[in-house]
Amino acid sequence: MIEKIMELYKERTKKECYRIEIEEGITPSIMDDKIGGIPYLPAGEEYPLDKNNNPMILLIQINLGNIKLDNYPQEGILEIFIDKECTWPCDYKIRYYRNITEYRKNLTQIDSENYIYDKPLKIKLIKDIEHMPLSDYRFSDVMSEVIKEVAGVEINNYSEVEEFFNKNGYDMYDELYKINIFPGNISGYADFTQTDPRPIKDAEGKVECLVKIDSNLGHGIMIGDSGIIFSFISEEDIKSGNFNNAIVDWDCC
Image (cartoon, rainbow, N blue to C red; front, side, top):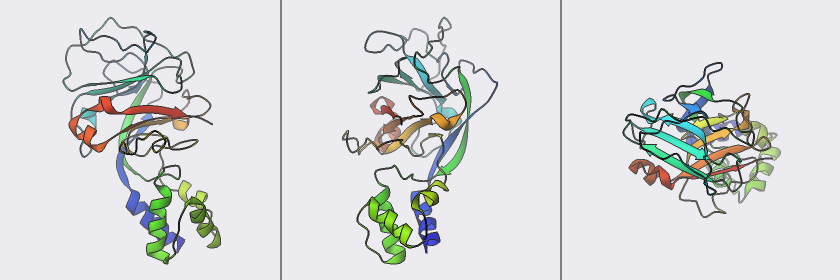
């Protein structure tokens, strides 16, 4: 029965996304998809500054022309910048340049003062399917519906989901850790070392994960104490290319 529950859960929560992989040993160029490094900035565009007027660091740069996802623009450069101290709450800026033009060539690399990455990393984006993790605030509701449909049992909360698995001889955590949860993605699911902040921050409408970078993505990445940085956005803002409405946050152990 648990096998049927897990198969239906995977079917209900499957989500097309691009998983992020690091291309080891390759220094990224100005136009590459990358974590860190010197960003693409159109000629005449001001470099993003934090609230103290200090230059921010590039967290990630994505050429949307390299990905094909429903509702996403099919062109342009998307960038997320954060303050170099990686403060909490996160100080961030998001830039989206739909038209790629002549870019500034006089920029220097801004390095992190807290350990986020030790050098710029060229990344590869691979289309894949991801499923909802345990830490998503919607998990217990979705799993409860699946259990009721398959087993006819009424489940009311997260603890009762865990108890149901235990009574049937399975460990809920073991079963959920077997499904695809990537340490880095574009448009997959966010994941958390602590608690999903969306309900707390009145951001339930921003259900889409724009970007997730986990410290486990690769050697040389460390967000706080083995943490995860993530960006949320609404489906409507993706469709309109209004990425400035996304929010960026992070947590750690």
